[in-house]
Length: 410
Image (cartoon, rainbow, N blue to C red; front, side, top):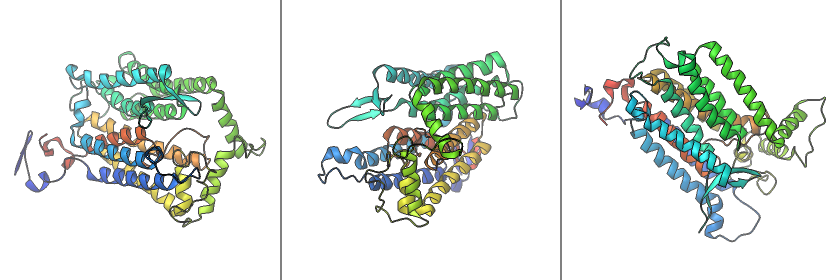
């Protein structure tokens, strides 16, 4: 027998890791695969010199952040996720502190942020000996899930029953409005720098409201408000409307096709990379499009490089890993020992799964082009780090037995 804070459990069960190892295994494998593919896609024709600055531009940086993301995932997986809940009044400072930090950073990036691709979306952390930047939008995605899960379950403790009138979200003014307004502020500030991430966050918010037991007419009001806000974010930046027109030119016979050397260049090159890879690919490191033809070859469009080098089978294998992670997260959500864990697992699972789906849709020209990276795989430090922590929170919900009384003592 093994003594926990809630009573004795069997020794064989107590020896199991205090988190869901399946989530950690899948996320870690995607990180390692991402390091390999970013290294392969980072080949350039600019020169053969190998100094620290050139290596830090992509391969070494991705390896460092993947390692940091994996360590962050393990630390989060070993922590009690309930530490972030709002079950008692004195616990408010933890989720609220994360929320205030995310809002402050999103405001700061609009004031002193660094422009990348014509958009102000990064904060410079360090300039020497190499440039190190931070994207607050990546933190905001995770904070949205944690804050909304805490807000929807405030004062509920270990309640696990079905939706009822006692849940805060069932009340319009004291439940729905504070949740939508506070999350709307996060989404709106994110949309000023990244419309794709804001749209992703909006879908996650609606989904978590639905899982949390919100009334259907409340969901309808939130959806309508989201459509109005999304239209406003589209209108303030002309290039966003240009991307929609480009997409419509690809899919409609009644509109002129986009210029293959202009607005349609990136999508054309991505589709060419996918098609030229065939079923088995050219071989790891043997892609052609990465030599100056395909923009964002190691970031938003890294899936095209994967398909060119490893073929359609390689691309489908990556998609299968995300589907496994989504399935595991949904299962953990259903087996969560409390409502906060249920909402947190549902939000994190959708965050990872929907971001992957958006990226695949963009690369295959199924939706208009957006700045959405492939989780854990695309080059970028902020995304790998914070999604790794989010995956760790998801893994911490899957403690042995799926029951509070079976959890090893913290």
